Length: 377
Ligand code: SF4
Ligand code: SF4
Image 1 (tube, helix red, strand yellow):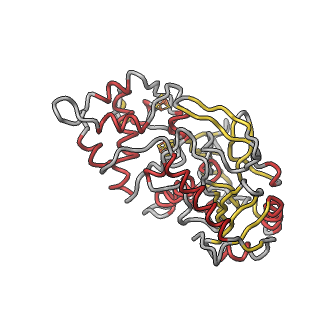
Image 2 (cartoon, rainbow, N blue to C red):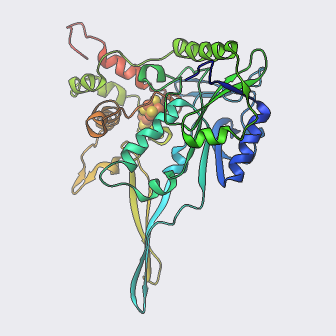
Image 3 (cartoon, rainbow, N blue to C red):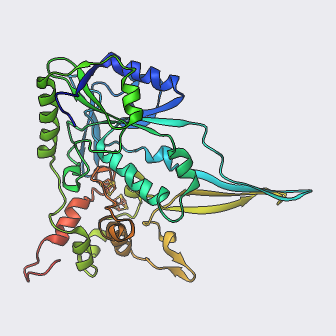
């Protein structure tokens, strides 16, 4: 909680100390930085690589960096990549086998060589991490690649004080305030001096905080942080329709609206690649020319790919309409039945990175809008 009694402050220089302590403890730091015309997540050596003075303007099918005068480091909305890329990598070798004189020797996935500290992750992406944990770590069949990388990860969240035009985390209950799943939480304040309210969310976070050059926050600092996060929530321009999304989706299984979306959707799969919770993969077996060595690799795949639903004889979702319906139905509907939570955290990436500008909130709203006959569309 951002309470006046417990709140502490660090300055921008304190973040460099944080980076130093994390490096000293053997972490590889992943955080936002400006790269390839975006604010994206990457391995960072220094706090100077954070996106100081950069934001982004977003819209359906639109993302442009924008410079800002206040020098803020975390006032940017979701970029094209999330921490999914580091914990559930786009490509991974699952196993290999070698034929030897003693028989066939099988080797499992290579153990990770890095332990990540994820710094500057916005609350919607912390929520996405919880979704990946539920799917890939806490199910009946935990994924060894994910669990090995996830084990020991430290999370420093940065509360969102400036949502983008494509954000809707407030209506999904996943932001802009940090409510859990982190070790340390930062709230950036720029008016009246650049500083960060900082609070621990775990014993590991408290231990780390004790190593940082902090000073007590005043009630004015705490009130400013509360105001900044509340303002982010109320000014968030997009939202999901009210009511039960699983019921809305279930009631619209045969809606003509799916054909309408399909007339715009390129089935390119960009939305699923950018989404921090989409986890689908396919596998490929390869062998060398001798036939003595084989490997099984897996790579991200997408429910928008026609081959993804291939069952003996052909794909079961041959049309674009059926593939878009599958994606949004799983995200907003059947994910609840399967995993007890939503598959969407409202980060807005699928809206900004869709080349056709298709907007999941507008498509859900279109399903919710009553037709002239008073029935769902
Ligand atoms: S909704 Fe957009 S990003 Fe997703 S598959 Fe269709 S065109 Fe591509
Ligand atoms: S469906 Fe879109 S808004 Fe929801 S979590 Fe995925 S990318 Fe973000």
